[in-house]
Length: 69
Image 1 (cartoon, one colour):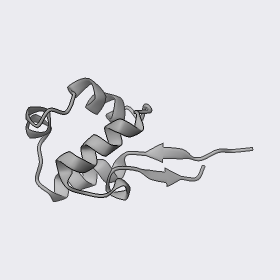
Image 2 (cartoon, rainbow, N blue to C red):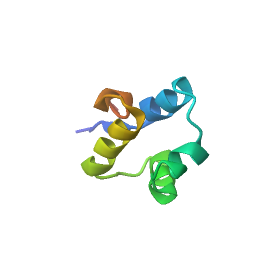
Image 3 (cartoon, rainbow, N blue to C red):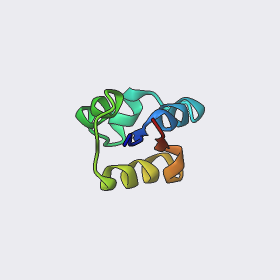
Image 4 (cartoon, helix red, strand yellow):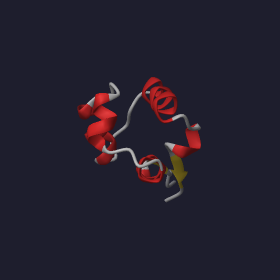
């Protein structure tokens, strides 16, 4: 049975749409290590998703999406 996966593509689109650079995101207090984990498609905690929603003033679906395989 194939399972889907979580994609962070919406996060990168949201950053671009809001014109927020990685430098600015790091200055806002977001961890560069966590950013690169997301860039590599690795899992992050739900607390991290909540923090990004606060920092970017957006909704969960602007950060992650479920992709069926």
